[in-house]
Length: 431
Image (cartoon, rainbow, N blue to C red; front, top):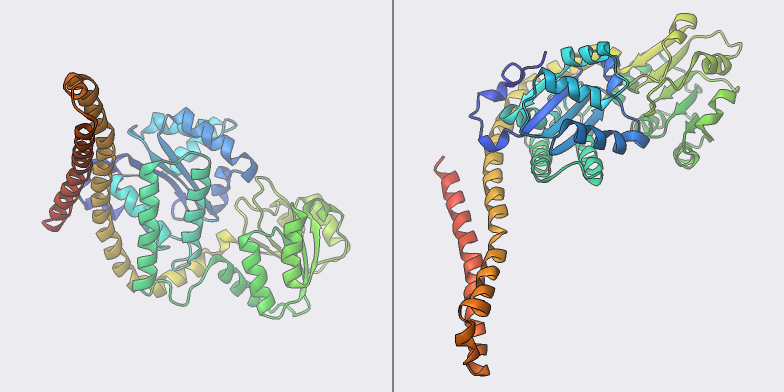
């Protein structure tokens, strides 16, 4: 599946690759190439994210790392000079999860897409602009990209190159959303799930169990409340967060640990947690259902799924999950197809613009050393080379000389920077 050059993975690779972009590389698992339920193998629980990602960065020997995980993709954005070939990927996946077996690593190798340089940047721009999303036109992805960067930056995993890439990525996404109709009448995984629920003609007095109070479930709860549903019970690991959402819904709140003891019945479960294992086990579900034999609805938007698949074998459940929303998502894509051309033009333009950003930044970093070097020359001149001459000067003459040297020092710093920027701007205009 992967292609070290990125040639098979992106139409953006036809652009001339700038050597400073060669360090940007992406290892991606998406709904386009991988079963969504399998993407859950790459999930990291929040409490373990910092230690695992720091360990991965060190073990892989890469300069920068950004980890993006959503309901339909996992992406590793890297800054490295290393070649992303089979030996690298084997070591990378083994370091990502030491519990991976050879079978797991083979699965990762066969399902990973690798993008480099221009192709990587184009892919990143496409992801944030939602044209590579399961639901084309949904705006949540731009927030997810920003949040992923802020988290990894707080962990000390990212540096200057990824910072610049994400800054440009957010700006490109905003330009796409502003200047095209790709996000007109926006939809999302949540809205698609609600659309499927609505088709089931659920009664207004239906009893909802909301498991998890994160962004996805909060958005789903708002949809339900907006459409006049009113019977809600919220469970969350942190009771305070459950209470916050429950208060907005005029419902009840419990810690997730109490789910196993809940016996008041339900009609619909809406679940989306960050757990690596099933939250709703067969034992818990049996207790929740009790003697009620009626068909239930479970909206499971977690990756990996919160509902143990064994439950589907033994109970009458209408499951609405991310992987069975793909057909509806395809219909949404067809309705927005004509906007894709305009989006790709914006993305291609900004790949070229990013090369100029990299050039300018390289000059800025180089010029940042100028003040230090000038000061070293000044100190040597004053304290060593002309120390004898200075010692014979009166205080007034020394003061004037100090002013002259300080003035020249300032100009030696500002003038080269301005000249360098002018050259870069002129160079960009001629291309």
